[in-house]
Amino acid sequence: MSETIISMQGITKSYGKHQVLHDVNLDIQKGDIFGLIGRNGAGKTTLFKVILGLSDYKGKLTIAGSGNLSAGRRKIGFLVGSNFFGSMTARENLEYYRVMKGLKEKREIDLVLKIVGLDKAKGPYSRFSMGMKQRLGIANAMLGGPEILILDEPTNGLDPQGIADVRALIQRLNEEFGMTVIVSSHILGELQNTAHKFGIINEGTLARVITQEDLISQQRAVRLRVDDVDRAKAALAAAGVQVLDEVTEQRSLEDFYFSLVGGKGGNAQ
Ligand code: ADP
Image (cartoon, rainbow, N blue to C red; front, side):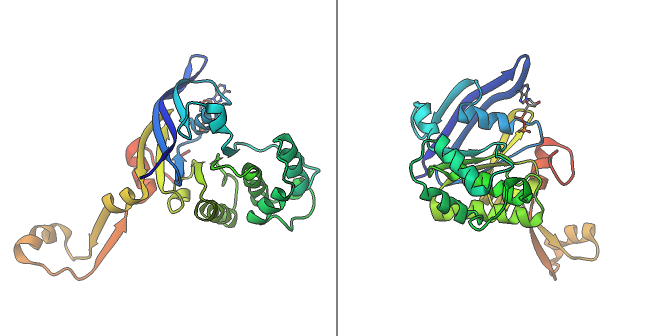
C-alpha cells in the first residue's frame, strides 16, 4: 500500500487580487519522485512555498500523516533558490547552514558533499560552475537527513551534462536513500525518465496528474509503413494486408502536456 506523505486539499493562494493557486488537490506518495511541470509563472514555486510554510494559503495541508505542520516540515529538505556566500568554499557554506539548522553532526557535511560529488571541490562558491552550484544546493537540502526533498527547478541553467548529473543524483537519492523527491521543471522532456508521476500545473490550476506507466500504456501509437495509408487502413481488416514494419512509439510527456494546455515548443515557457 502506498502511503500519502503530502496531501493538499483545496489549496488556494492569492497575492492581493491575483489568484495564483486555484483549488489545488494533490496527494504525493511516499517513495515517489514527483515531477511538477509548468510554464514559468504557473505557480510551482508558490505551491512549494505553501508546503514549506513560507507562504500563507487557504485550504488543507497535511504532511507525513499529521496536521502538525511544524513537525511534518522538519522532515523536508528544500532547494528553492539558493543563498550561498560567494567567498566561501562548499564546505564552509554547508558548515554555516549546519549551524543555522542546529545540526550537531559535523560529519554530515562530508557525507552530503560526497553524495553530490563535491567532496573534492576547491575554491570559493563564486568560481563554481552552475552544475556545482546546483549540486551544493541539493547537498544543503540534504543536511539533517530529510525524508522529503523539494527541489525547485534544480536543472535551471545547466548544460546537458549538468542536467544528466542532477537527474542521476535525484534517482540515487530516491533509490538508495529512500527519499521522496518533489521536483519542478518548466522544461518538459527533462523529468520524463526521472519522475514516477507528473503533475501538470497551468496558470495555478493542477490540470492533471499522470504516472509514468500511464504515459507508456495509454499513449501508444503504432506506425505502419505501407505505400498508401488511406487504402491500407480500409484494406487492412478486409483484405488481410500484411504489415511489414511496425514501430511502437511512446507519446512524449511534451505531446501530452501540449494536448492538455495548448501551445507547442521545446519547453513549457
Ligand atoms: P513558477 O514557479 O511556476 O514559475 P511562481 O509560483 O513563482 O511560478 O509564480 C506564480 C505567479 O505568482 C506568477 O504570476 C508570479 O508573478 C506571482 N507571484 C509569485 N510571487 C509573488 C509575490 N511575492 N508577489 C506577487 N506575485 C507573485
